[in-house]
Image (cartoon, rainbow, N blue to C red; front, top):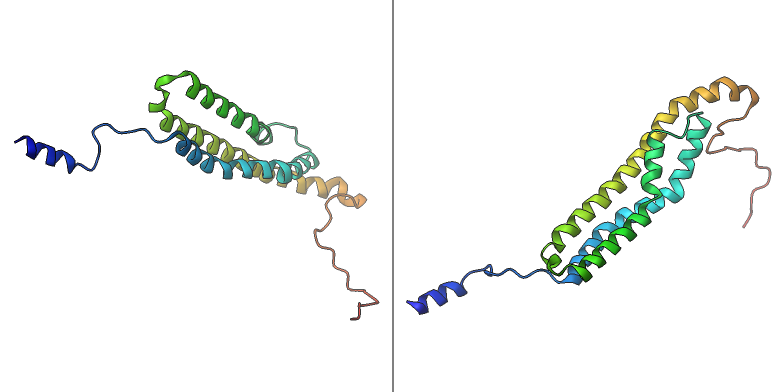
Amino acid sequence: MCANLKSLESMNTEPSHPQTEARWKTYAKAGIAVVPAVVACLMARAYILPKVQQIWAEAGLGMNGPITASLAVLQNVVPALFVAVVLFALMEWRWRTGARFRGALTTVAVVLLNTAAFFGIIALCVAAVLAAPNLRNATRSGDAESGAGLQPAIVRYDGLQSRPTF
Protein backbone atom coordinates (compact mmCIF):
# COMPACT_ATOMS: atom_id res chain seq x y z
CA MET A 1 0.00 0.00 0.00
CA CYS A 2 2.85 2.40 0.76
CA ALA A 3 4.26 1.93 -2.70
CA ASN A 4 0.93 2.96 -4.17
CA LEU A 5 0.85 6.16 -2.07
CA LYS A 6 4.32 7.14 -3.21
CA SER A 7 3.43 6.60 -6.84
CA LEU A 8 0.22 8.61 -6.42
CA GLU A 9 2.12 11.43 -4.71
CA SER A 10 4.66 11.61 -7.52
CA MET A 11 1.81 12.11 -10.01
CA ASN A 12 0.69 15.37 -8.40
CA THR A 13 1.40 18.32 -10.63
CA GLU A 14 1.43 20.87 -7.79
CA PRO A 15 3.88 20.48 -4.95
CA SER A 16 2.42 20.26 -1.48
CA HIS A 17 4.85 23.01 -0.32
CA PRO A 18 4.78 25.79 -2.91
CA GLN A 19 8.07 27.62 -3.27
CA THR A 20 8.19 31.38 -3.52
CA GLU A 21 9.36 32.87 -6.77
CA ALA A 22 12.95 34.01 -6.98
CA ARG A 23 13.54 37.54 -5.72
CA TRP A 24 15.13 38.78 -8.93
CA LYS A 25 12.33 37.32 -11.03
CA THR A 26 9.59 39.05 -9.01
CA TYR A 27 11.31 42.42 -9.14
CA ALA A 28 12.17 42.04 -12.83
CA LYS A 29 8.50 41.42 -13.63
CA ALA A 30 7.48 44.43 -11.53
CA GLY A 31 10.08 46.61 -13.24
CA ILE A 32 8.93 45.54 -16.68
CA ALA A 33 5.33 46.33 -15.73
CA VAL A 34 6.16 49.78 -14.29
CA VAL A 35 8.64 51.08 -16.89
CA PRO A 36 6.05 51.97 -19.59
CA ALA A 37 3.97 54.00 -17.14
CA VAL A 38 7.00 55.83 -15.78
CA VAL A 39 8.28 56.62 -19.29
CA ALA A 40 4.81 57.86 -20.31
CA CYS A 41 4.65 60.10 -17.24
CA LEU A 42 8.11 61.51 -17.82
CA MET A 43 7.34 62.21 -21.47
CA ALA A 44 4.01 63.80 -20.57
CA ARG A 45 5.76 65.94 -17.96
CA ALA A 46 8.46 67.04 -20.38
CA TYR A 47 6.44 67.64 -23.55
CA ILE A 48 2.70 67.83 -22.89
CA LEU A 49 2.47 69.46 -19.46
CA PRO A 50 4.16 72.77 -20.42
CA LYS A 51 1.86 73.17 -23.41
CA VAL A 52 -1.26 72.40 -21.37
CA GLN A 53 -0.10 74.87 -18.71
CA GLN A 54 0.32 77.50 -21.42
CA ILE A 55 -3.16 76.78 -22.80
CA TRP A 56 -4.58 76.86 -19.27
CA ALA A 57 -2.94 80.25 -18.58
CA GLU A 58 -4.04 81.76 -21.92
CA ALA A 59 -7.59 80.64 -21.19
CA GLY A 60 -7.46 82.73 -18.02
CA LEU A 61 -8.07 79.84 -15.63
CA GLY A 62 -6.45 79.56 -12.22
CA MET A 63 -4.14 76.74 -11.28
CA ASN A 64 -6.78 74.47 -9.78
CA GLY A 65 -8.81 71.42 -10.68
CA PRO A 66 -7.47 68.83 -13.09
CA ILE A 67 -4.27 70.73 -13.86
CA THR A 68 -3.34 70.57 -10.18
CA ALA A 69 -4.16 66.87 -10.03
CA SER A 70 -1.99 66.14 -13.07
CA LEU A 71 0.82 68.24 -11.62
CA ALA A 72 0.64 66.35 -8.34
CA VAL A 73 1.02 63.02 -10.10
CA LEU A 74 3.44 63.91 -12.88
CA GLN A 75 5.84 65.86 -10.65
CA ASN A 76 6.01 63.03 -8.09
CA VAL A 77 6.58 60.00 -10.32
CA VAL A 78 10.28 59.67 -9.61
CA PRO A 79 9.97 60.23 -5.83
CA ALA A 80 7.14 57.66 -5.65
CA LEU A 81 9.27 55.14 -7.52
CA PHE A 82 12.19 55.85 -5.18
CA VAL A 83 10.00 55.38 -2.10
CA ALA A 84 8.71 52.06 -3.48
CA VAL A 85 12.25 50.82 -4.09
CA VAL A 86 13.33 51.83 -0.58
CA LEU A 87 10.30 50.15 1.00
CA PHE A 88 10.94 46.90 -0.87
CA ALA A 89 14.63 47.02 0.06
CA LEU A 90 13.66 47.45 3.72
CA MET A 91 11.16 44.62 3.43
CA GLU A 92 13.82 42.27 2.05
CA TRP A 93 16.39 43.35 4.60
CA ARG A 94 14.36 43.51 7.81
CA TRP A 95 11.25 41.35 7.40
CA ARG A 96 12.16 37.68 7.39
CA THR A 97 8.70 36.36 6.47
CA GLY A 98 8.21 39.02 3.79
CA ALA A 99 9.16 36.57 1.05
CA ARG A 100 5.69 35.03 1.33
CA PHE A 101 4.08 38.36 0.55
CA ARG A 102 6.62 39.64 -2.00
CA GLY A 103 4.50 38.76 -5.02
CA ALA A 104 1.31 40.26 -3.65
CA LEU A 105 3.03 43.43 -2.44
CA THR A 106 4.82 44.01 -5.74
CA THR A 107 1.56 43.47 -7.59
CA VAL A 108 -0.15 46.06 -5.41
CA ALA A 109 2.72 48.51 -5.91
CA VAL A 110 2.68 48.02 -9.69
CA VAL A 111 -1.08 48.52 -9.86
CA LEU A 112 -0.89 51.67 -7.73
CA LEU A 113 1.95 53.20 -9.74
CA ASN A 114 0.30 52.39 -13.08
CA THR A 115 -3.05 53.74 -11.87
CA ALA A 116 -1.41 56.95 -10.70
CA ALA A 117 0.33 57.37 -14.05
CA PHE A 118 -2.92 56.75 -15.91
CA PHE A 119 -4.74 59.21 -13.66
CA GLY A 120 -2.09 61.90 -14.16
CA ILE A 121 -2.16 61.65 -17.94
CA ILE A 122 -5.96 61.54 -18.07
CA ALA A 123 -6.15 64.59 -15.76
CA LEU A 124 -3.80 66.39 -18.15
CA CYS A 125 -6.08 65.59 -21.09
CA VAL A 126 -9.17 66.67 -19.13
CA ALA A 127 -7.45 69.96 -18.24
CA ALA A 128 -6.73 70.65 -21.92
CA VAL A 129 -10.31 69.86 -22.93
CA LEU A 130 -11.76 72.03 -20.16
CA ALA A 131 -9.53 74.97 -21.13
CA ALA A 132 -10.44 74.82 -24.82
CA PRO A 133 -13.81 76.67 -24.67
CA ASN A 134 -12.35 79.42 -22.48
CA LEU A 135 -9.37 79.73 -24.79
CA ARG A 136 -11.65 80.13 -27.80
CA ASN A 137 -13.68 82.81 -26.03
CA ALA A 138 -10.50 84.63 -24.94
CA THR A 139 -9.19 84.79 -28.50
CA ARG A 140 -12.52 86.05 -29.85
CA SER A 141 -12.96 88.91 -27.38
CA GLY A 142 -9.74 90.84 -26.86
CA ASP A 143 -6.94 89.21 -28.73
CA ALA A 144 -8.68 88.90 -32.09
CA GLU A 145 -8.77 92.66 -32.58
CA SER A 146 -5.10 93.21 -31.76
CA GLY A 147 -3.92 90.36 -33.95
CA ALA A 148 -2.36 88.51 -31.02
CA GLY A 149 -3.43 85.10 -29.84
CA LEU A 150 -3.26 81.77 -31.51
CA GLN A 151 -1.52 81.51 -34.84
CA PRO A 152 -2.17 78.72 -37.31
CA ALA A 153 0.07 75.71 -36.91
CA ILE A 154 0.85 75.55 -40.63
CA VAL A 155 1.57 78.71 -42.56
CA ARG A 156 1.11 78.35 -46.27
CA TYR A 157 3.25 80.48 -48.54
CA ASP A 158 2.83 80.02 -52.27
CA GLY A 159 4.77 83.07 -53.44
CA LEU A 160 8.21 81.47 -53.72
CA GLN A 161 10.15 83.28 -56.45
CA SER A 162 13.12 81.03 -56.66
CA ARG A 163 13.04 77.29 -56.51
CA PRO A 164 16.11 75.18 -55.83
CA THR A 165 17.62 73.59 -58.91
CA PHE A 166 19.57 70.40 -58.86
